Length: 295
Ligand code: NAD
Image (cartoon, rainbow, N blue to C red; front, side, top):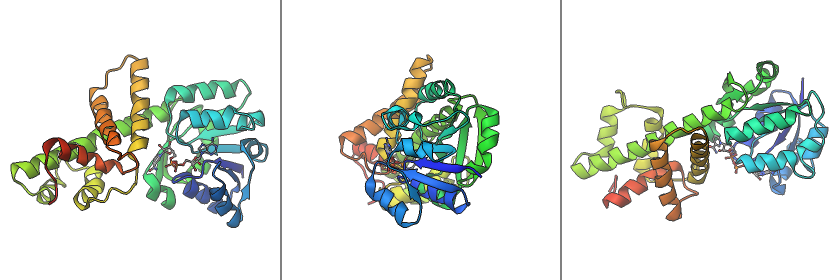
């Protein structure tokens, strides 16, 4: 069994690392937040002083960090992972980042004979706790095969997509669909309310039909209750859509719906709502229509 290093113990990384440990793998962890590290130390997990020590004492290093610059910093800064990586070791980056950055990390590590997979996830904090996240993977297929069992300790599905960057291309496609889906769901509920129908009854009437979706099932109760605690923060969805726009424009792709969803999220950020769940997108449609879905 591999000894696993885990860097980034936030909302997602903490339960994911615990699931790796529960499956019987040796584990050493690092996060720049000292109190999180202390929690793991109290649970009996080996903790490291920095990324370099994680790389030194493990066979494979998993990273679960906010965005591309954080992964670049964890890999290549002084005392970072790359200072200790040996030929034959691997880095599995499970953060949602720009696929162009994933390809660059793959190439830079390949020069040192170190393997790299981009393996972002969907399923949110509940999926991370239950070990039922979906993992989408880019990189070399033999490397994917080697670490499949390790990834499955955290997941209900682990899918190989293609070469480096393909995991994050898949994740960005997922984030485009979710952002536009919540936006039009919100638009439809405000439309129904203002035109004279009860949005809760609209939901009951249409949820089993063609318009029904996981987004409708999970986000409608939040919209109706006005509970916008995250969940998935608006600021993280802005990060993902920025990566969508950067990737799209680099490759000469036009993404008008994602661009519109990005502007809606930016407007909510301007209203100070960036720490709220992305179901708060409904507040944008309530504001421009001077209407409330409930009440
Ligand atoms: P988070 O902000 O809760 O956690 C990030 C952790 O990384 C923090 O503990 C922080 O201290 C640590 N960190 C940052 N830079 C570091 C560095 N250089 N070295 C060591 N530690 C560092 O974020 P999260 O919600 O766990 O999300 C992580 C990734 O997973 C993001 O890319 C996010 O988009 C993605 N994601 C999140 C969700 C969700 O529902 N929260 C769902 C799917 C995917």
